[in-house]
Length: 295
Image (cartoon, rainbow, N blue to C red; front, side, top):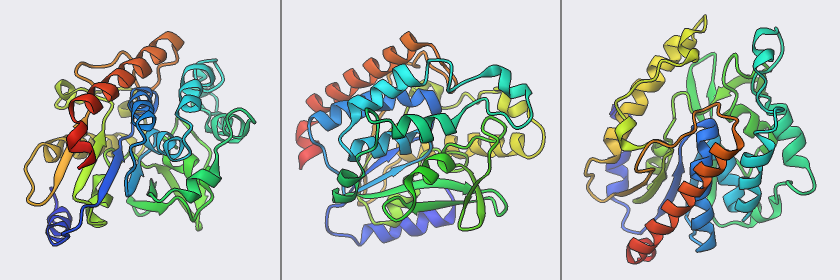
């Protein structure tokens, strides 16, 4: 990893008090697996000092803090598979969105039955950070989600170029998908001196070295270069998670086998299956690591 990680690792070593973090990776619709894991975690009232989410992880994270994982599941299974969130025809129409974050954020997340309980989020003792990638400088920013417009952050962190074409502007700068360069946003946890870090991923270990050549890699402009860097960083981060680091415990929860969903799956049954797999894995993890979780 880069020198910045080495600096953070040295900083964490001098922290003698336990500080926990929940790190939630990106993955778009593959985040349905993560939703299931967090549903199990929430049912057992697992709390963390810090929560950090990229893209889908940010959406799951805010529902975790608001204690609304059942609503999170319904959004994945019902609202994101009904033909309104993904529209393949729009991909060929200038100005239209293949992935409609306006529908998700401005409509679904404001519906009476789906509205985010921000009072619970603000009262939570957990620090909450959401990633977004600043396009002009090509740097990632970790936003304190309790201090910014949450709806704007939710758009920024999931704004995949060409897939979502609207510009998301924060503090006068344009931001895109936070998972581009921080697909597993563990760097912030280290910066905050967290020494017990739970990481929930949406891909199996067997997928770590497989670099997918999806349609994002075939797009014009800077996107293929960004995706190549995204894959490289994700590969390095996966290696980092399984290395031993003095004074730091990293616990990884991920599917044993590849889940049936991809980033852009819109099949209701497949998404429900992914939630169910995640829920079972979450319960299994809690039952087999009960002492380690609470110590």
